[in-house]
Image (cartoon, rainbow, N blue to C red; front, side):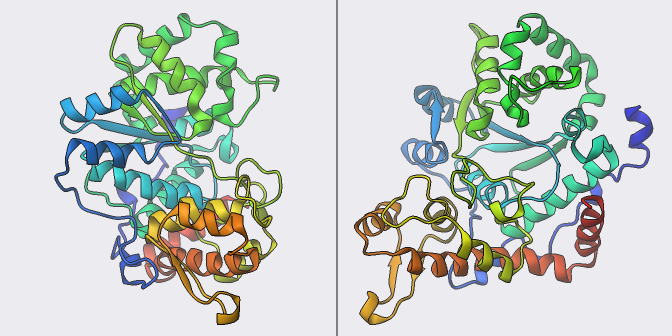
Length: 384
């Protein structure tokens, strides 16, 4: 069935490179964007840069040793092409990838088209899934991801090319784990252990675990919601070199009580192709309790998206309300917010302005590049 579908799937080469991958560099609010060039650094500098990505690192001593001993360590993340891209997947991933490549890593993106099909995304239509995957790559290029040391690998292509290597590995992982252990990993698909799962969805964690070894990844740089399958990979290794887990933070949704953004609820997330008016409306309505930073999406978007991308966060107020202030560290921002010196009514307009400046190069690219514009049109049709 897969081979028949692939005859009509657009090839990976159809991905369009934007005219400039660092268009954000001209924006005064975000001088350099996230992109940077590889440069020689001390081991401590490289370790600090890479470690700054992860909310959790298993294990830090292994990470330091890897950076010290291995030339061009491989980091990887996988993504299902399954619909619109929100700002955490777009901007945060660009920031993290650029930090890793700056520190000397090669980053492999595993475009999990077969996995999206197994998880019944886009109705299981592989042609639609492939188109959405190309659209997502376009966004990363437009937002300023440095592509010098980045590889995009389509799962269906790579597995077909090396099937004799891949499937025995998947079967061995499945053989060595019971059903209960595999079902505990179902969070990686956005499912719960109690959900009624298809046989394909039971197989999914075994395949994702195998991906790590198939890609020869040294670092698993995925979200914290993927932790369980990454731990499964470390358990499977036994005495061998274990992959290092570097889990980034999951940003909350914009609405109160949402632990993560939801693609199915447009008001819960900022999407990479949102118009200025969309961003303004969503941030205006977003949950933003005064004095509280934990679980505050507006504060977290500022700390984890704006500050690392722009290297600063500018708040403009009337002099009687504190005047203009530029923040360059999360600690400084948190101190003012928790003390009341920075109020939600000041934070929200500044956040809206910063986010729109970050997203404008993406909007411009899809407006002005004919091939990219056509790709976005196809994606919107497929998402209806």
